[in-house]
Length: 123
Image (cartoon, rainbow, N blue to C red):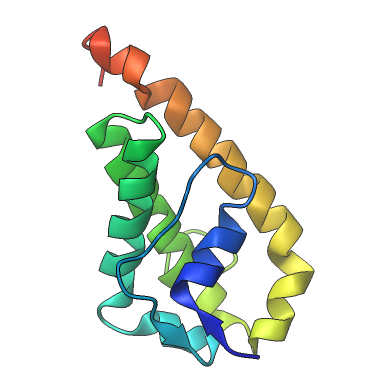
């Protein structure tokens, strides 16, 4: 199965209000393609832009984008790492839990760094 970066990010963010539109939709033939040197920045930037458009402060959007990029291509903590999946077909087994985690992280980012908090001067 062939996946593009945009499709993957939309799947991961399916339970959030984010509208994910990467400027160029990188094809990913295998999960380890997420280790491509430019992939981390593309994910982080794409998600940060979507989060800004959804009302997060600049700091919150950047933090959330970086967090999701770490989920995709490396994190020193004991969490699922998408680049270690044996194939894209294996994503289906983990996708519901990942989507819930992404939605919970986005909700927390909104709570901490949403526009209302920025107006109060808390960032």
